Image (cartoon, rainbow, N blue to C red; front, side):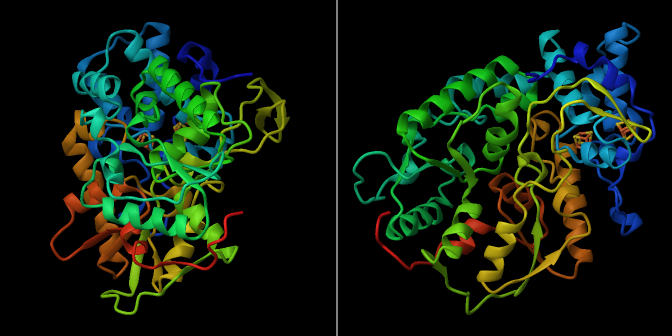
Length: 435
Ligand code: SF4
Ligand code: SF4
């Protein structure tokens, strides 16, 4: 079984990059203004900053033609690991190049060779010491649950909740979080949470190139969920969802029979099962809202399936894997549930030009805000400019990382809302019987 591959083992993938530059643009361009797929390229304005450019640098490092310079480190650090280049590349080259896995491997090589940026190294120290990138005290991680009372459950919970550090340490959102969990409890769902024993998912460690740390976090997370006996794991964190579904299998860890869902997917499932109702909001200030597909919630949470990477099957002019598998191509992530919930709330959902599998990253991921804050701010500005062209001033996302970062960078006349805040007062249990 192939899991996360070192860069040297991806030599052939690097070599197959044709330098076509398609990865700089979304596959279906609707306007020149919003044609870009790559926030890193938009920042650096030089080929090395793109997905394909990083592959060339990786190839050069392997052959010894290139050494790790400050410029190379900067180009790699400006990449948000958003995966948009991966989707665009596959339009022409299917699985022949798969830039994203090479970008992960390139970062891991730089860490192994001692070239991790200082800001990333500090972030990793925080994650190791406290379980979160900001270094908030570990003992405060469960403070969001103060005052929360859940119905006692006999035996294993139906659902284990994973909160994620962004939400767990956000005092402005803890009442919304508690309201959603209380609605689940009132609907008869036996839920449990890990309180302050919840740790990092390991997703950010993997993005930064610290593969061994990511493996250790993945293993302990899988063990905690297995020990709980829960049949379903529901996370409030888009980044954790991406880690659970797509990074853990790359590291050789899976939750086996445990279903892994984002909280929006689970709420939508309860609505469809008539266990939960969502009251339409009567007095919404702006009934037209644009939905921002977070990279982590969307394309990066598409399940990743280990496969035989021997590409020796000829299909037309394209090499394909011997083992049949579903190509990650921008269609299997969490796209529909948040939109459906917004519909239940009474909003008209406006689609941005770059949406779903080709959504433009807000810039808040993979250590970019820590290492190159100006690159993260430029990405947010680019995304918010798209909102203005959609003729609405309200943007909603299901990812707390996106809403916080976009909210910090939004003009005064733009509202950036987190879906959990919109849902908090609108959930109404239909049944209260435990199954
Ligand atoms: S990564 Fe793919 S899309 Fe980008 S330049 Fe290489 S072959 Fe072209
Ligand atoms: S992962 Fe995102 S930021 Fe990085 S090169 Fe690809 S499109 Fe650009």
